Amino acid sequence: MQVVRTIAEFLRLKRHLCRQDASEKLRRPSVGFVPTMGNLHDGHMALIRRMQKDDDIGVASIFVNPAQFGPAEDLTKYPRTLEDDLRKCDEAGVHLVFVPDESEMYHPDRSTEVAVGEITDRYCGASRPGHFDGVSLVVAKLFNIVQPDRAYFGLKDYQQYRVIDRMARDLDFPLEVVPCPTVREWNGLAMSSRNNYLSPEEKTVASTIYAGLCAAAIAFNGGVSDAAELVRKAQAELDDAVKLEYLEVAHPETLEPRAVAERGDVMLVAAKVGATRLIDNIILGSETNNAD
Amino acid sequence: MQVVRTIAEFLRLKRHLCRQDASEKLRRPSVGFVPTMGNLHDGHMALIRRMQKDDDIGVASIFVNPAQFGPAEDLTKYPRTLEDDLRKCDEAGVHLVFVPDESEMYHPDRSTEVAVGEITDRYCGASRPGHFDGVSLVVAKLFNIVQPDRAYFGLKDYQQYRVIDRMARDLDFPLEVVPCPTVREWNGLAMSSRNNYLSPEEKTVASTIYAGLCAAAIAFNGGVSDAAELVRKAQAELDDAVKLEYLEVAHPETLEPRAVAERGDVMLVAAKVGATRLIDNIILGSETNNAD
Image (cartoon, rainbow over all chains, first blue to last red; front, side, top):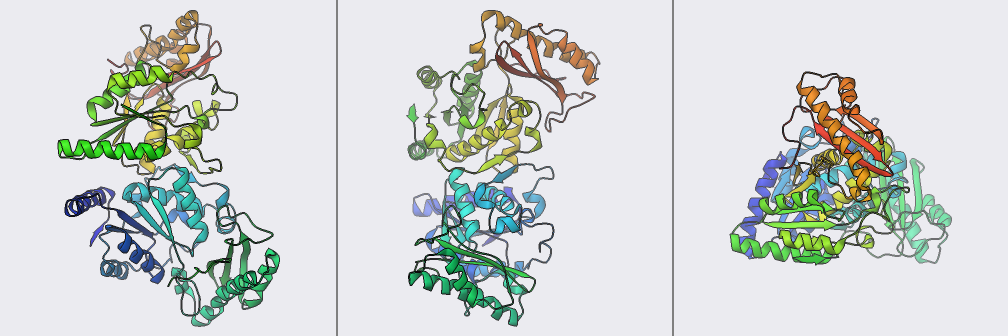
């Protein structure tokens, strides 16, 4: 595994790896990509394992992207565990890890923005203004640097996945955006670097978020399609210490809110437990909500 | 030469061409790209000749991009001369011409925008709101479809060149944006598809625009650096029928207006002659304003 800190060095090494692989296999190798902000947990590792299975050359990036944090958010305290992360990537067989610093990614007079439009306005976009513009900007840049054939994103960040997928389609990025199932703790809590902020008691409280989503999904399977009723079913499961930011049923692609849920719709939730903001979601009428 | 109308077919043929060229030359071929809106004149052909000289595989695109026209602009009457354009490309040795229709380029619910920021606000951006957003969007898409090593842009559209160059830098497109000198008619008028709209008398009137720019450049070489004075020198040459929209000295990269001109600054002009809007520019203190 090689760890690279500059774009120029990344391009050089990737070209070399591709050439080597092509002459061994007598065909153009496929390149996979898992962009991360580090602090790799089992959710990230599931993406990386999927990439290692499906692609000839595996690339991961570790970059805590300032552009996607608001001024009052947790940029400085976001967990940074580079040594551990690199060991995990190495053990998983990743070929190249791109670890740029901020000056390598953002020119001091950078002015270009990538905005994916209405789909970024609701939900996390409403409570985190500019967040998805920062995400789409850095992912567009990373797509151009890495030039992968496939890029893997976790479904825990459902809105992010839809934003990236739409950006890739609208801008004709020559790659496939591959969504991967959410990985959960034993108690159902969706894996997230922000789970590090939770006390053991808060983790128990936080686990009722997924319990709520499951209750709604079970009610949907039992014939309830009124979105307000599904929301009530979910709310009934939540610990009183879960402070909801949003809990809604939405169209799975456009993320338009639904009054009446249809099979394949997504129920999206964001909530605070203590000072920690958590998100999760479930697809209604689907069997495939969990990673196996 | 092959003419391609869909992205899928383009990708297939380009891959085939690159493989063929690589096995002949035993190295990865370089791909050049000249994006156009068709109605190819000597300005375009200079870009195409430069590409054919510098790159192994030459790609041109012809697409009158609706996203860069305002509602009151000349989208429907913009000159379309596809048969002639394809003949010229063929004669110049272009390998692939991409001629998508609107539905191939723009998904009905497309929502992603690429905005290059402040540099797009002034000059043509001020009089044509949204114009440069439409340009950066279509060029980002074409860069992703064509994936060239070099893309060639004419310096007649100076602000456009700077917008594209900045977008390519800010988004890390893995290619070189190559600026090429403005090609002019015998009387100095910068080549443009919109010159088709001019009567012979209007062409004579329009030629005084370049005469004005030259007068300013000569004054600058003679020691005048006050921008207002340089503007007056240029204005003195203009025919009374030239209706100025802007005439300013600007920093060559940021396009910030200058009060005192420096060597390498650009003087930018937009003006109407009759109903036709024309643009031109000159670099102050440079020997290389004209194509040879």
